[in-house]
Image 1 (cartoon, rainbow, N blue to C red):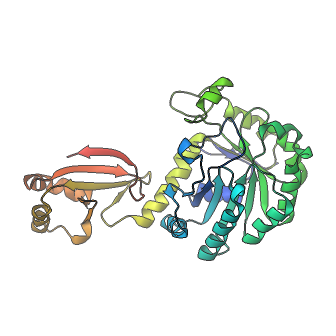
Image 2: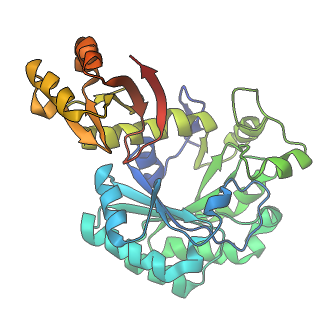
Image 3: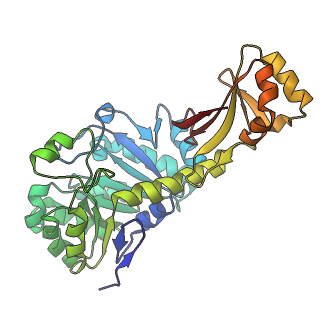
Length: 348
C-alpha cells in the first residue's frame, strides 16, 4: 500500500494515472465526442444542451478537424481526455480524432477515454492500434458489487493485456467499494470523483436523499468520507474533489491558454483570466487621434468587434482624455477564449 498524498483542495491519492498527472497540470484537452448515451445514471451532470450528438473541444463547438487541432494548440495540450455521453457509440469518430491528434502532436500526446460500455476485444484492439494510452471504465452502479461476473471484467483484463493503462472511474458514493475485488485481481486503478449537484441531476439526487456539503459548494455531503473509507483498502486510488477540479485543474488549464494566446496588452490574472481595457465610441477616428497624441504604442491596442481593446493600465492613465473624445470606458475580466465568458466588468 502506497502512502496517501493529500492536497489543499481536498483531493488525495496513493496512485495517479498518467492521464490524471496531465490533468493536474491543466494540460489535457477535453474532447466531448457526443452527448448521446444509452445509460440513465441518476448523477449524470451533462447539461441539456449537450445531451445530443454534438462535439466539443473544451468549450469550443467542433464543426471541423481544424477546430480540434486549434483548441489543442491554443492550450498547448500535452494530451486529450475523450468523453461524452458515451463516446464508443461513435467509435469511428473516436478513432478518427485519435489518429488526428496523434498525427498532429506525436505519439507522446497522451489520450485517455471514458466509457460506460464493456467493449469487446475487437473494439479494444482498434482503440489500442489507434494509440489509446488509457481507458477508464464506468460500469453501471447496479453492477458494482458483482463486477467480476460482468463483461467489464473481460474488458479491463483485455485492455491491460493490449498494453493500455486501465481502471474504473465512478462517483464516490456508498457501494463504490464493490469494485475493489476486480481491481485488486487485475491490477487496475480506481478513480473516485466527488459527487456534485448540477442543473440536470439535482431532482434525481434530492429524491435519493443526497444533500449539499454547504451553501458554497455543489459537492454532495459525505462523498469525500466514502472515499476516505476506501483509501485504507484500495491499492491504486485517486479521489478528485469538486474543489480541486475548479481550483486547480480548470485554473491551470486557463493559465496555459492565457499564456499561449494573450496579446501584448492583455493582463493575465493568477486564475488564468484576461483583464483588458475597452473603449466604446461612435467616433473611432477621434479616439485614435487621442491615442496617437498620447503616444500609445500600436501593439498596446486593437479593434475587436467594433470596440477598441487596450492595455487596462494605459486606459486608466488616459481615461479622462478618452472620455473628452466621447469614449465610454470599462475594464473587463474574461476567460481566455475567443468570445470568452466575461467574469466582471468595471466602468471607469
